[in-house]
Length: 455
Image 1 (cartoon, one colour):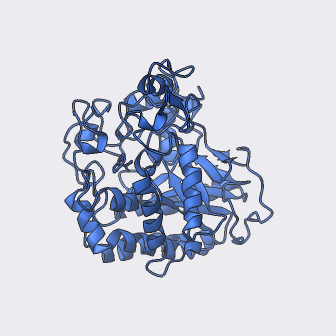
Image 2 (tube, one colour):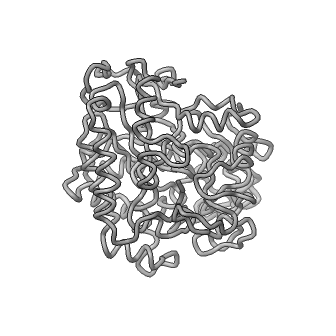
Image 3 (cartoon, one colour):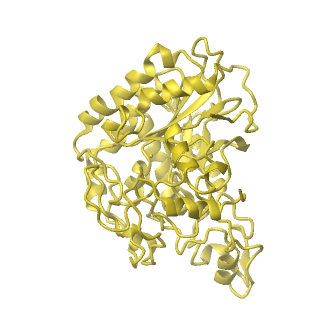
């Protein structure tokens, strides 16, 4: 998947922990388990969240992994074959059956990542998809329709399950930032903007899946280091509105947005704010912030949620933030602000996010687990989630032949010196990484070591 900055962005591809025990407020409309209840305002409130046995077993097999192996993570439906299960991994029905077992009749969230658009990941190569740019009909009939058919089965639709869908990571932001002659534009993104198949595909998915009573759709909205600039912020809200009203969908089929999916942007930078200045120079002029209006994910997610309300979404839509890899703890975590020698020293000395550049997105060195999954943690935020399963690679460090449609992106190569999307900086990627979505033990250990809050 892609992660771009400015005109840049994020991603890649895919026992019951209670988010009721996760400090959520139980809804008066809670699902009884006997029949599908009316949709609740926040599906995570008062609910357990499904723990994926496939991921949990891999995590538990790692040294120290048992500390987090009971956490809920996203299930990535990143190709048609994933619906029925591939390579020994469980398919959708198997996950839903196991979720019903874990639920014990109590409301339980199942987190799915719906991720197989035609021409997927038009601005990167690590998670290119199986469908060509024009294969919108195949996307509808062989990917979305089968998922909808399974979710509609009475066994699941009339149950205690609440299905949360992350809809097509990175796709809509790419139409804003990586098209139209911009320095970060790619021919592939220009093609997808011209043919409209990202907008059509997202609209179709929202409509088809959102018509099911216990399904909650969250549209991917990039992250602050991609969409936080003035020239990206409202245009991205507008293209999300366009998709949410395409192919028969309406804004009411959208429960909210998700930010930072599979990315590394710090949740909250405590050592500086966007309003600070050093010797008369605003923090916005620092090389790290580069005139962005946001310095962290929490402020961005809250502001972007409000921007969607401003352009016509319901006032009660929510937001999710993927905190699976944005903790930035360990010995490199600053204990206070940087020196006020100049604005760059101040920002670089105090920022938790230790990436070389905010546009770096692949298997980042020094990253750590972030806040544990939690319901209703802040105003406007439905939950902190681990939608990207920790330990799953973002992309291979070198070219690896495969039958999954995944290319080699130099941003996953630790020797790469960069491109316009990361201002020609080093990639910051870990070496010896496997294909996106495959287990990467070294990354998992890095995330444990640098977790914040610490394990």
